[in-house]
Image 1 (spheres, rainbow, N blue to C red):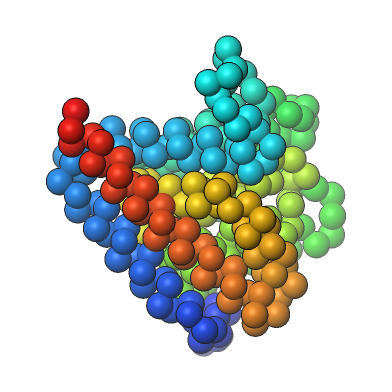
Image 2 (cartoon, helix red, strand yellow; image 1 turned 90 degrees about the vertical axis):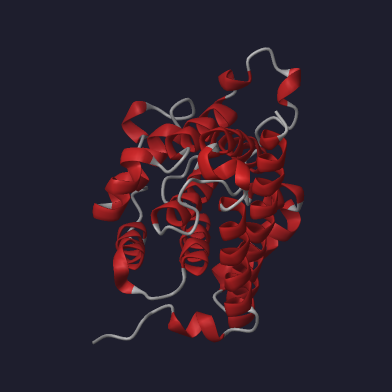
Length: 250
């Protein structure tokens, strides 16, 4: 039996603990009284917040209220389509991800970049000899080649896509969408209530520096990125809790 490729990451300082914190926090958010039956409303609000934050990180508008038609902005519109496709549990996209993750990845790019590139580029990875093999390896990881916990798998997929930039357009929105998709499909956040994107948006320099550390591939860089992502999931669970609190007062 081949060794688990992500097992060494669990030995990096702080990773296992941060992963457990993320899992526990998301579990609490799902158990909030407003989410026991009313989770669809919470999921819809979480999707909106996730789209806004992810869009800002890719240069989208910081103040949607200043725009006559926010959805008409190509970056925000793409981020919103991605978030809505995953809203409340991902629907059919989760099944595609579990069977054929590269097809799901192509679909996410089609949603994210629809107003940014020509139709002939949508869902098509760049013509780079490194892209195809690395995407194949990522597909193997997310379909069972590792026993690493879901927060770590989501962080690895996120970091790899940010590093690889497989499409050359809307790659950040796609990477964050894949992170969300991993947490949903794995059962870590089955209804998509968490909003880790808000943490990344609020600290963009920290986010980008950590992503560069992941790309460097050093133990310090890898560990720093994984811990940052897990902490964002933990903070995203607190965002989910605040959404549920607001829903319970309506």
